[in-house]
Length: 433
Image (cartoon, rainbow, N blue to C red; front, side):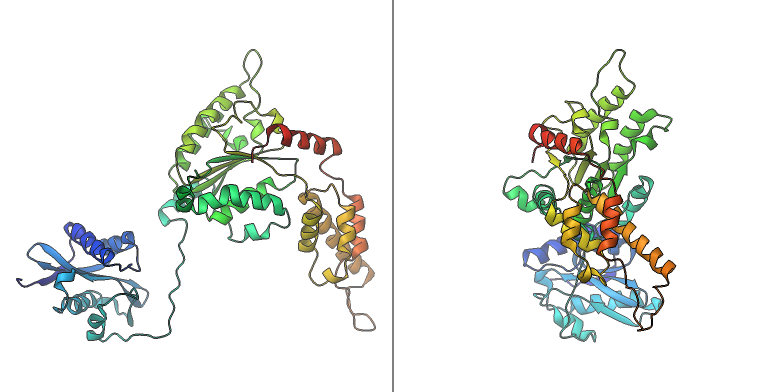
């Protein structure tokens, strides 16, 4: 073979770099960095190639982070190994980075990689007993601008775990929605088509919005809430603004899109002349099929009054599931009270009594009653001077059972018996789980 030489990376070397990547994969070596990261660093950071004539036979790519440099890629074609190319590539890329004043140059290599000699020859030391940890950031930097314009956000990762109680609802949403979306390749093997749109229905205050946010948190997808009332002020009108919003959402790689109280824009179409909102309903019915054609997205519509929705809106093919979110049972109420009662007094509070007395309460009702009890107990402690140390050095630590029972008695349940009965009828007539 003729001799090789080292030179700076040129954009025309991308194909050669790709060939080196494929050669590694063919030898069952899994590079630490993704191909997209390597290509991006080659173009904007520091990269050198070894060439024989016009053929790329090796490459090294480095980048700097503060005062530390990283070798993100080092490879030579199999037939060119053992000729000192790796050592020369490392020397060359280090020279290109010398002006940065780096204090350390590091590299992470796959366990099965055999080109250790190149690093040892350049004075690298192998660090023993190290573990490599990696976490994928779900939203790329380029998407953040578009997400901000939409009013979307990345939610904390623990929202799913923080949903107290509601075990059956969580299990259903986990299996029907989260599992196929989070493990799409596995779902495909079983012939499962990941859901694209779902309706959550139930009485007010039962946690539909909380569940929508928790789903986004669980998937680590951006959460974008669409507010029809805000879009109505757009010069293009509500229908036009709705269409433009979904066009902008299509630029995101992933998204959970949430429309609360969707009955406001998808109610039964009737009357002569047609209601102005009928055009909005028609537009939404057109948007949903187009939305469903885009992978990596989930539309969650929530409604308190599912029977008021237009029949075409709930038709098969638009929504994969129509899932009821009802009032919490005793187990769920227990979990909710335990979450809201301060840990310092939890053991002294008769939670079972609170659970019994709060039957028919929504999660929002329970939270309101719990917060009110804490506020009242604090005010009473201050008024009575009980917050200060007593003669025996004790302090009042928080609300007691009677405080919670008093606020339960003063809290009007959001969901009436009539509404709760209608909800059960809606489950029989309209739910699809």
